[in-house]
Length: 229
Image 1 (cartoon, helix red, strand yellow):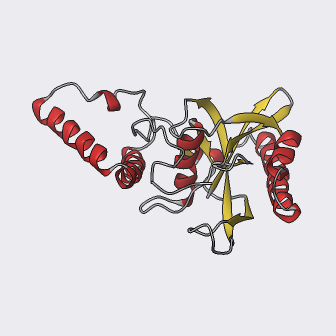
Image 2 (spheres, helix red, strand yellow):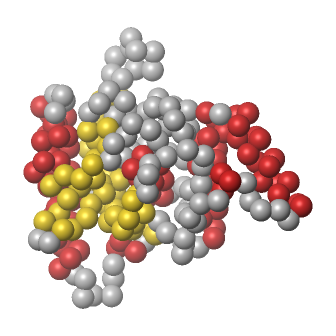
């Protein structure tokens, strides 16, 4: 699942891209997480990779094919279908993942960056997603006078229902647990001890309330321990 993050500046639309481990530009994206919908996974990736707070569209508006390298570095690359969800960015925090370098681009610049260092057919897939996103955003803006707003479906702010908030926290903590099990266990124990003794929360949890709270990571890998693109 990918989060196609955008903002509107004047009459123009800008897209937020992040760097892959190999240095190419891409959309924030990731795989399925237990207990989360596709849109919620896209929301989690947007927050972790780019620090995004915003509004995510529940239904995907496009699908593209990307090439994923083999796990051992020697096996043939596999083609993976990625569902793209539109996300209107309301504000940005520093991303949880290091070296992602989230950067805003115009639609034309985004297409050029996404096509760099990719085969022509894969680059065309990314460019098509940007074109479809622009068309979708323009339709949504024309329909703002109606009572239906698809981008209200998945909120990425603290006003979200507690059940969704808890699922996002659990998914993010599970990722951190897989990468740093000892640190994650210590964090959980300290949090539980503070609750029992009615002490202040550990510093790691003392942040502006958002659906995902995990300690800042410093490596290039994602919080789930997988080597992400």
